Image 1 (tube, rainbow, N blue to C red):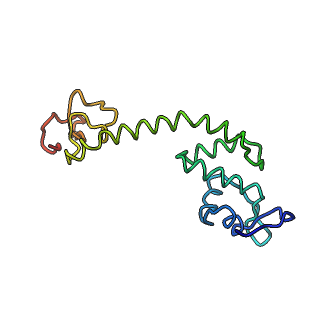
Image 2 (image 1 turned 180 degrees about the horizontal axis):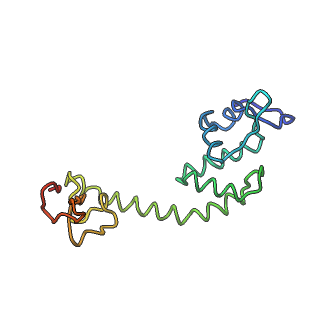
Image 3 (image 1 turned 30 degrees about the horizontal axis):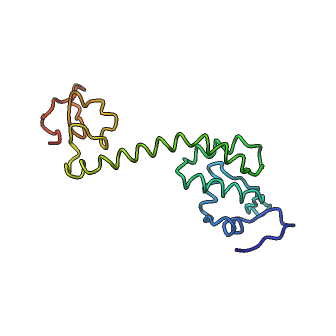
Length: 165
């Protein structure tokens, strides 16, 4: 890993990529989404402050656990501009994200547990299919992976032409 002398307070996009392990294109993408910022030189080259390293690490760690970029951006926007996220920042934010992650884990476990039923069906037209109709809002009235709309806007009855199975 290339070492950057302490006296250099700004990094080129290549230096930031080398130090953070993120591709240059990813850094440009993060910047376009407001996750990191740079200034432009008179030659229109990007220069990042050194604390962009910690911001990129913060973004990548949050992404690895499944936090959406919009949520990460909102979290970083709460920090004072140009301030490096601290351990305390990560602890506070990760605690806030814990319930969201727990809910996603429950959903994935539920999907995994029902996957065998859907594989054996083949067309996803079970009476209760958690993959094609997770909230099963029509389960009491109809079965199938989809309900087709008639010209009048009414739902076709079970077994109507064009309905799966």
